[in-house]
Image 1: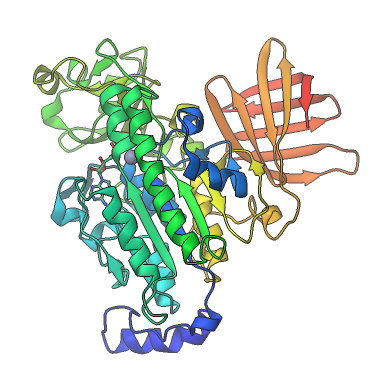
Image 2: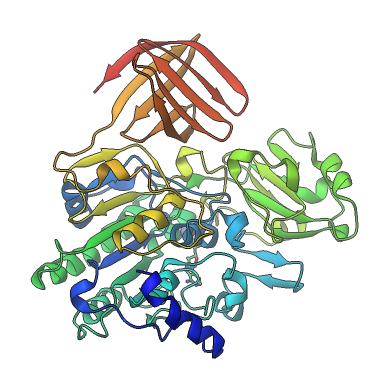
Length: 499
Ligand code: AMP
Ligand code: ZN
Ligand code: ZN
């Protein structure tokens, strides 16, 4: 689609117009099916059984559901949402935290800073799908999504909204239906919808608490109104709908805080983000000094200089990736004494932001529409691969810098029989490994972690190999071996197999 439009974009740039917004629109009869991307903030991978959620369940029954959605590091709202729509890891797209610092501009970004949130400067390094769509002649309508208020590479969605928690859910879904009722030349083909209430209740009351369940029921109720409206218009089965969430949620408590100022002189560093992972800049000291001060300082703290961050975190090389990352173990938080002195006990019961492989950090993934067989089930998928899936569904050429892959989804497209997961449990000399194997990738479950590995090759002897950076799994007959974060698992014996 892109090639036919290049000349228009080129002309727009030469004339210093704002990007390619004036690109020739794709005629209605050539347009792909609409795609709606939904995010239910903080919907953990295991919330599907939290309540009766008939609207979401309808898409699960009629579409594809993954075990979970493995996000990027850090597992926070802005980095993870922006990865979903760009296919880039956080250290590539540059939205490295909800609170971040840009060393070139000497400027700070935070969620509550309206000016920063709407400033394209923070989002330029990768291209969100609404920009890809607009540049290739489709229109986009976003009812909230991190980045959607900003002009990115000169382009904004045709319809977008200034973020506000307070907009009633009914208004959001009714507006979406109004957009679908527009004349063909105005109607968006790519749409987003976002709800924050499940995350807010998760922070306040903890994962799976009753208020979280009630918030989820309310979101599902409004999705039901939306889906009925789409059905009345004959659209529900003539479009693709993707339900995602940006991370999960873990319990926290006052007994599990690590005070950074116990180990480090905070007047000599800049800490741009706190919580499950602290992002630290050596403003008035040396990186080595910070690492030396924090290394081994607390049994639940890990510390890395930028270049030593484990490869599987794929944090990247953007200038906003800090000099030092200090990461707390699951359930632990990093803070400082002056801040905590002002905190009320029990004001925070749930949090997220830890290692993206931690299962409790995993979000939800459901996709529904004509490209997919009803009732398909697949292992945990990676959020960076969703841009590749979405551009494929929309017939768009993806941006060159994106880092995801369509491969995990290819075997699902245009099939009549639903995909299923083959489950195998191995005993590796007393350690339990669970392999959840799909057509093109697998979920490798070890302790509280679920890793995603790609299928590499299949031998004629029935052997299978899967890999991802720092991760490996190989099986043949009833035995397997694996590598996870440098740990070797060998002579693993198949104890349970379920196809
Ligand atoms: P987190 O704790 O990382 O899950 O952040 C969740 C919060 O992000 C929500 O409660 C919202 O208030 C905020 N948020 C979500 N989307 C946006 C947006 N587009 N602009 C500003 N704030 C947002
Ligand atoms: Zn969130
Ligand atoms: Zn949150």
